[in-house]
Length: 358
Image: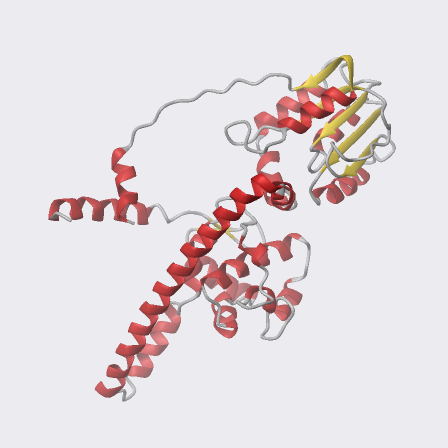
């Protein structure tokens, strides 16, 4: 590589490294931190949750660190007390076996619970000693450690580099395997399982609910005039049931929400908490296979939030069209019933060249 090209690539790397400084969400609440190191110190000193200590005690590798972050987020979302989680992560505990590499490791925990989880990008920060630990090691070295001890550290450092290289190779192999499995799943029907699992956690639903323009538009449409008042409504892919609740509040006579993921259980509870159980029924299953409370009867309105990245990512449109053809009465309302995609070109050769040297 030419010297000037190396200098340019090195500058790109500095820009990329600077981009890693971002908000890191706590694993136990809504508090955010400016860096992973701030989070680690806060959790250790204020919460007694020492991620470095747990990683060291369980001898976690890179994948174990990823599993640990996702497991903590899942357990907290499910309402498990922090003390119970910490006890379960002790060596030999039931949760520890799910994160450690081995036959009992839970590879589903390699799937991020949160989109763009900055802590997952900093797993290596708690798989190695922190600043405080390094200072203690330096102090120990000044208490009489001689050149012989320092010579012994050199092979150890080399071993650490070799271990990191091995982890990188393993990560590449795992990524390739996951990509191959996802590709095969699209052909064999495993996509259904992937979809169900990915939408069974609250994180992705929080992102959608926080999209105020989108959620507000659905609320306004369902509340408009007599579109749903006194009508039967089918909510395809109801998720948390928010659209079903909008329809119930707007005066619908009967609402049935259908969802293939485990979030259907949460939706039932939310319907009950909002006092709408007399109007809203939640069905767990695919709309193509589920037995709906109204049988083969037609509905007046079908509502669905089926749009994903690049419009079609969630692969739900076929389910919506199936429901339309089977259940929607002639002259009924499908919401939404049209969509427009806008695509803009982008050229950034400097950014793209960066990836050639990674």
